[in-house]
Image: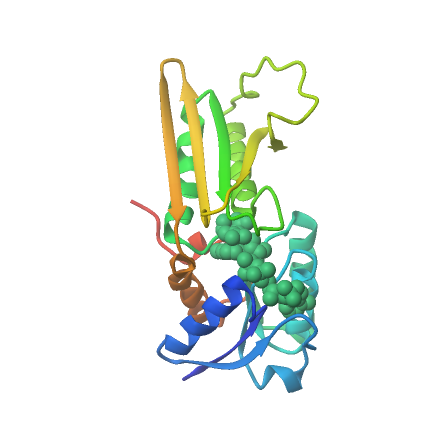
Length: 252
Ligand SMILES: NC(=O)C1=CN([C@@H]2O[C@H](COP(=O)(O)OP(=O)(O)OC[C@H]3O[C@@H](n4cnc5c(N)ncnc54)[C@H](OP(=O)(O)O)[C@@H]3O)[C@@H](O)[C@H]2O)C=CC1
Ligand SMILES: O=C(O)C1=N[C@H](C(=O)O)C[C@H](O)C1
């Protein structure tokens, strides 16, 4: 059966690329393109079954609640989500009116980034030091990137599980924040540079050695297979799914 898809943020960099990918995808029909100023309502959604949200961190959660109220399953790539926001979506999904509905939120849909996050989490227990450097195009409105925050959280969780203490760091004075943001104890550095698209480097250090894990997305086409996979799969799930790795078998 054809999946009818609405794209929210359709005029943006990601939204417009997603519209093209949905139009090209077998078994999908793009039925609605909504952007800032457009109402989310049954009339504007044109009987879509799945919505894809690539908007801005300030509005994405409200969009998800409105889309659930309209009876759609939702795929979200927009950043800015925290545990409290996830909990509010879980609570919404638990209401009888939302029975059977599903939301998938992923900070990154590129396979190289999903693998980089997974490898970083796997490697983290073996290294004394770990830092994350994300590098993006200068039009990006949020820092650090959602991917970097998720990466740092996964590194921190793996370190805690392995019983590692804080990373070694003798810094006593850092009035201008040169050591970057600190996410669950992991330092995260953000670079904004003309010419870049979306890149991340995870550096892990031990005495006398370093492991560098790097992902480079040179073009937004890199995110499309993951988005299309999520659109296909979201309807077969229930509740909240976080991360594209939940749909891909990374074992082995
Ligand atoms: N998960 C992933 O793999 C990826 C995630 N992202 C994330 O996706 C998000 C979008 O990125 P990008 O496409 O570069 O950003 P853009 O700014 O290019 O696009 C955002 C679009 O959303 C529109 N918008 C703003 N408010 C609303 C609203 N209330 N309803 C509908 N549309 C609205 C904007 O309109 P206007 O400009 O008029 O405000 C704009 O057209 C970011 O959070 C980014 O970090 C990006 C790449 C990959
Ligand atoms: O804004 C972007 O471009 C990107 N945003 C996401 C993030 O913040 O992690 C994903 C990717 O890095 C591109």
